[in-house]
Amino acid sequence: MTELGIAMIGHAFMGAAHSQAWRVAPRFFDLPLRPVMSVLAGRDAGRAAAAADRLGWAEAVTDWRSVLERDDVHVVDICTPGDTHAEIAIAALDAGKHVLCEKPMANTVAEAVAMAEAAERAAARGVRAMVGFSYRRVPALGLARDLVARGRLGRIHHVRAQYLQDWIVDPAAPLSWRLDKAKAGSGALGDIGAHIVDATQFILGDTIREVVGTMETFVTERPLATEHSGLSGTASDETGPVTVDDAALFLARFAGGALGSFEATRFANGRKNALRIEVNGSAGSLAFDFEDMNVLQFFDGTEDSAVAGFRRIVVTEPEHPYVGSWWPAGHGLGYEHAFTHQVVDFVRAVAEGTDPAPTFADGLRVQRVLAAVEDSAASGTWHQV
Image (cartoon, rainbow, N blue to C red; front, side, top):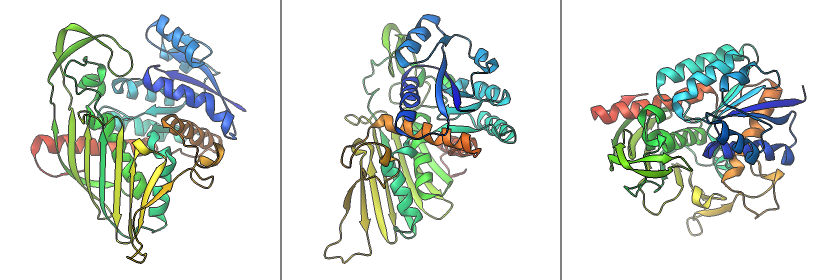
């Protein structure tokens, strides 16, 4: 096989990002298989057809189950709300299709367990599954992981992670599916908190073992959305209840002994996509902010104190993760490039017959952390992951 037929389920915000990645990856990276954008599936025939034409898919269908029967489909890319992930992923894996599933992997631990079990069954037949934690593929965070793995920070003491957005600060913003627990599973915790849980575990090569947290909903009633576009849509005169958290904060202990503090909110006025991570170790520190995504701050604690200070590393050199296939040094990358890198890693793993990371087992681990935070917020006590 030289071609890899792709079926994408869903075509909104994440569908557009994934579509660009499938289009671009084989044009900038030497891939062992050529992705073919075979079919897009969406619930509304008109919108699905328009999206397929705009995003570069060969055709559109309204029944996602039909793509599982097609011989020209080898991969199912899931870009739907969280309440559908488990059903689609398990069916696709059982049908022998490789699966790329957007995060958070599921809405509940039970769903994530079933998905991980399906992925384990499929792996025995050479079928692969990956969760789409795209920030792992930001070159600066790849460099951060490398520095930690090489011991440049020494023993890790502290991790601080924030994901700050402001897109629903306005109480008149409409009630999209992301504010409905039945569809989204949780609010800021699962939508953006999942990213910083995965990213910190990725950088440290360690896992969170215990949490204590709190969650808050600031606006409990919103106008109903009449038409979905982007993240929120347009509003009607009717209102409905917000059933998810607007903000989640928690403390964590890592298995290796590090302490962590985490904050995820969509009410940080003026912050658009501020995913921030700082790691402090016995020999150094590093700091990252996605709103300056091509830069990693690094402090080498072994240097002479007279000249020591945080070093600003512009992560655009060809030896940095992924960067060698793009532009000359100093010509920065953007949000969409992480999705391209995700496709590259996924395709190469499928061709090599290896499990692409993060696996569904990794996704389940993140889901267990999210569930422990929710349980802790309800009880006010520490919870094991």
